[in-house]
Length: 307
Image 1 (tube, helix red, strand yellow):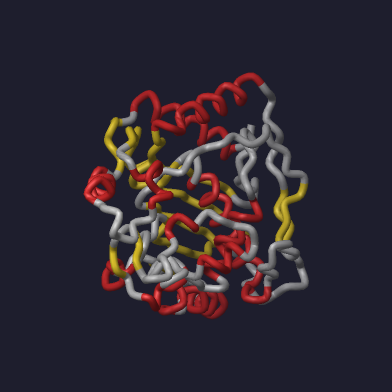
Image 2 (cartoon, rainbow, N blue to C red; image 1 turned 90 degrees about the vertical axis):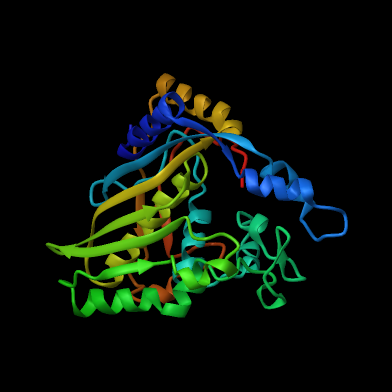
């Protein structure tokens, strides 16, 4: 069993057995109930915003040695290309345009896309934000040139103790369709290894977390590669780790399969050695410069999205 699977399955079991039960998004659901046919509320979201029981634990911490193992679950299939392209959308392309992802067959942000009239969930963002997720994620990275600043520091001031990329900027929260869940990364270099702390305000453990762990590990590998470093430690901190009630069946199935079968070993991450510029990595649907070698897993397990 991989180190990631071991920590992940333990976390899932503890959330279900020890987690506090709360109702998810009652305020949003209340807004839907008050809505009427004359508004632009997206009716296709009706099933995802109703109150739903959520099981949660606070302050969960996972640790990974990236030099030892690339973290991606083998107890179920994780869409690696999708996760990496989402990461590149944020930190390389520095975009908030949902269409960029759709052009690559990725629909995971469709539910948060601001409508053509500039509204989302009944709130007016303005037509200039149509087709985007507003002032969140890649928009923040671009505004503050966070990736460029980090790479510059890694190349020229490796002992710097202020290498932080924060996606949580209070002045831009009102125009963000979804304030960043993974909102902060802290970086340092010790003995030629690039280390990373990832801070997550709220993590959907069945859906979001497997993506986030693998994509931030990939980001660390890529930055280490272009800065002549080796990947080191990654610490992943979740303020609110939760499982929605309609995901419980899928999680129990994953836990059962992991007990009954021998899990495959972790795959290897391949990075095109000829690419030395982070902004030059291929971000097409083919993701030609970043690949997983020998990724074996127990198959797909469907999990619904909740908002």
